[in-house]
Length: 452
Ligand code: ASP
Ligand code: MG
Image 1: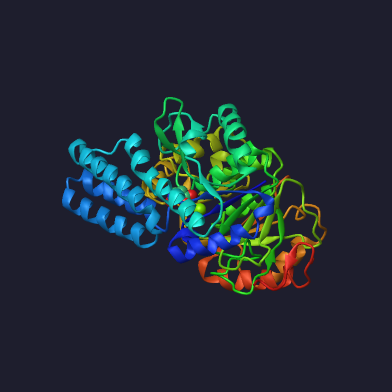
Image 2 (image 1 turned 60 degrees about the vertical axis):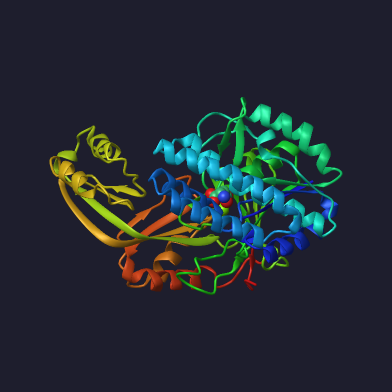
């Protein structure tokens, strides 16, 4: 059995859903369970409708709702007509309630946003049937049982796994099960969601619950690349990578997958594949629990732009204790995450990307130290678990950087990554030369030279 998850853009239209049907049909022997996101940008659109209703703009809310209904009708088979009508009928009632309430409690966020996946999963199941595929719809809210933390619910694993094993597994042995991602319900039946982007999480939970051999996340890119194509084109496809490495990359903006959401897969040692629904013959990227041996020390280079560097210097730090605590308390008080930190005897340098409270933070820091801020920096993050034990890798990295001024370097003892801070203006040239040096020869068991 396998789980195949298709994101919003993979099911954004009738044509896209038909393409998905073809991909599923080719894998019938593997007994797929299909998990889908809401069609296209439906979740955002539902939340916008709700915002209008809450702001007492009923007319605008209902107009947008009518547009959304038209969109669903246009992209669905005729057999879905009454189902779409009844869902939108309910949605009108939700809009009326929100307009009365004039506020948007988290239960309502979940209620209204759940309609995206409730609709898409039924529409996909009906489209499959139209194409003579033996599909059956399962309401995710009957099997994904969660706590009550609306908008960010966590599954109650023993119950959820028991239901998946009892209800989905036997069904999937006979038919193509289609479920909505992202949604669940509390034990007493209130609709919840797992947080934005939560369909990947659903796929991992379902995979773990039915004991799938593989969890496939179908997106619209060919998987992970050796570098961010927005910065430097010409990267190679990473064929296989570990969960730990993928997690480092995702944090640094490789948007393909949120690795925290695939923890259930990792715990049950189920490989996760990133595949491209617009180029299904590409093998994509396989994310595995074990270490991936590789003769290239680095598997991928990720970047994060718009970073601000904060330099804190104080002679009082010399031989004193409690200084770091005081610094971090200030960032904590303003809920500002710190990304990379380096220290010397008398100074601390750190980076942040959320500068909303920078002025207040600097003012407070100014009472205990000298503070200097530099904006327009960029972080380059080299990820690969062989970095730490490959001789000469640092030499190679610094040689590649030539005369680029590196502002900060960070690598921890057990870390899978080495981070470098450079001025934004130097980012492109730094990454270009790092990429060409670190991937001059490729370990072909890990990389595919041809992206496509
Ligand atoms: N539809 C939800 C969202 O847009 C969940 C998902 O697509 O993963 O956040
Ligand atoms: Mg997603």
